Length: 127
Length: 127
Length: 127
Length: 127
Image 1 (cartoon, rainbow over the protein chains, first blue to last red):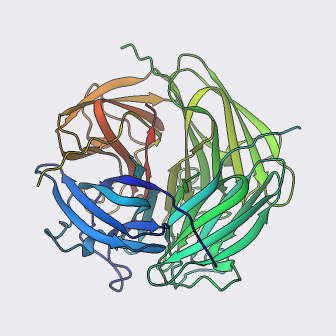
Image 2: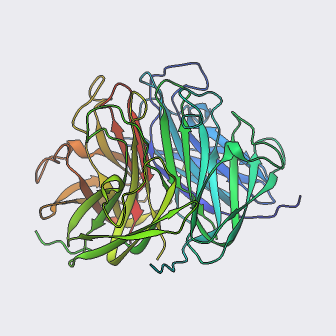
Image 3: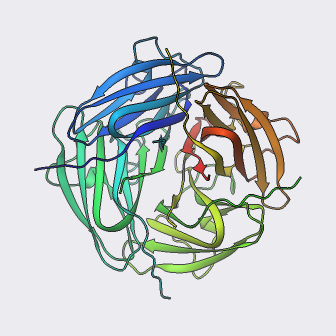
């Protein structure tokens, strides 16, 4: 099968970032997390950068990752390593930029209480 | 009553695809699932194709379905048959194309824990 | 205070309509429901019509309602009376049209299991 | 690190406003709330105003807040003080305006029942 679709935008925003600080249930599946779910449907790799904004200090980033051509990449924010770990239990926002069109959906799993809660939204395509 | 509305787009993206691998409660209503909820409000049938993208292999598809004129079609991804079943417990993204304007909303029911969680978003209209 | 903002669109789509057929907890607050939450921020009343689409029969509607100028109106789909009650436990889609700009957000409360689930999305602005 | 991104819009709408009137679990984390999560990624402070719309009375506002340059601000609607507290258990809509581009995401935590529910959506960018 030949697939050739280039879809999306190169700047995306998640405004409600927050990693809940407790979890119920087996890790890692039920560990509370924020995810940036990214599609690169195009024919060349996308070099993606995330910058995090906080309430009381300067932005942190970029966090760099590559989404290969024709691939899905669901990135837990919890799992980003450098330039510094994403703080747990702290409000943040996230701007995602890419050198190729991508689509971003933001999802949180919150298992602080006995049965998990979910929320999801297509992120804001800003350019 | 005469209704004649053509609304929507012909390319849509779901970036956070994932079918939770366990369920609580009676099947099929409470079975964990991803749904692509599709409206074809127009006067001619829409021939719709879904292509799935994964983290570590080439895309799979198209999965074909027809949404008749003036009809709703809520498609559980779990229930797509060929070219191959949608894998359970695996991250994916989905591009949906149609030869007539449609509207797509993505919803997940996750009943891995005792009380179900829900998430939903209008998919990303890409063209 | 003087407020004069006209915002929104005149055609909106909810693609994942479904009223869960059971509920847990006190009615009406915790009764499972779909809501179309509507803002008319403008200076004249909005005459709004909803048409429902189904999988296996012709559309039903219009359901008419008026959202006065500068008012919020959160409409439970469960509570629409004529031309016929909205069926419970049945997949549907909904097209909402208005003669003045409005904004529509779709929310479901699902209390079939012991603790309620929620989902919400801004509806699709189609024109 | 130098970061210089200006993203977003200056008018945003939340159509489904509602602060659930009961909560389960420790306050304030698990207190039922509506949040307007705001990013100001630009280089100058954003002066933001919220106006609330109700079903049966004139709008209330503006509620004023400042989101500094390059900062995240997650505002619980519950915590807005003047011109009057946001009523609990009452349907409302919210229009948010800013003198600099921002991005707004609407999230509700509902802990009326034993395990919390979440919902979230990027708000409607209206101008």
